[in-house]
Length: 374
Image (cartoon, rainbow, N blue to C red; front, side, top):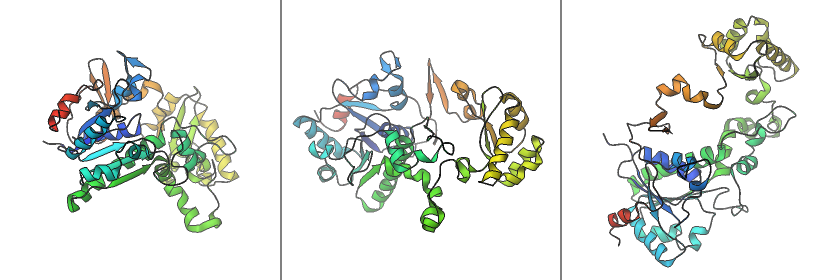
């Protein structure tokens, strides 16, 4: 059975994480993804440690099931080749700073003249417009500007440093995918492609959508979002992280009364239900009581207690523990081939064979021949 995106051809000019993860998902959904790389160096992630057989593990994880085309866009011949190539592709993704593609002579307007059906997706830190569109940045900068970074952490403390790339994946890759798939649907109706402008800072704002609702609807009356004081960032005692006796952590997400009532009953403290939804001092007293209770036993004790109960309580997995999680294994997220374990992308529409990432320019001649180019 064909995969959903079988027949869709993607030309990937992006580097590092946001664009390559988006094209990895497209490849896993059946699209043909051809990665355009600078001669000699290629994608920067090829050289980032740790290395496996002289290739970065990060590059291996992001670029399976893709082909590599070596092309120098700083030359007239390279630009001419790209213009000829786009006639044969449905989607082009790039992640240069705004204006770079235009300076190379490969703007959306230029390439759309060659292929009016082309969907051209640009992923950048601050978007193609606005006073800061040309600023350099990374994931941490984008979530700082969007306000998402400030929302995590304890009341009165520093913002919580995220352990994952929220802006790159959540704000960049996933919104690029949404935009591309929407544009493909639109093109099916109109026959025309479009330009898709993805700002990782804009995308990071999506993480605050629910939390900002009261502020935007109610105005100043609602007050600004406060770190560690809102219902879901530390204000509710029934929704938080608790340290155990062996310095591990328990995630208690028992937001609904029926769940937290069950937690209180399980630990023998039914009176704590009263302070579950108090964001003031009463709630903080409840939190301190819960901290003492959970600190009295090691994590294994609490896992044994709560595992049979459906109360929204989970252990915080550390290190390689996630690789042995029976639920994640049952979902088929990890696939071992030889001495490499691949992390599957979340959407599965069938069995996708895994092809190792390409060497720089490995498929240059093959791709050019397919497009009728010498």
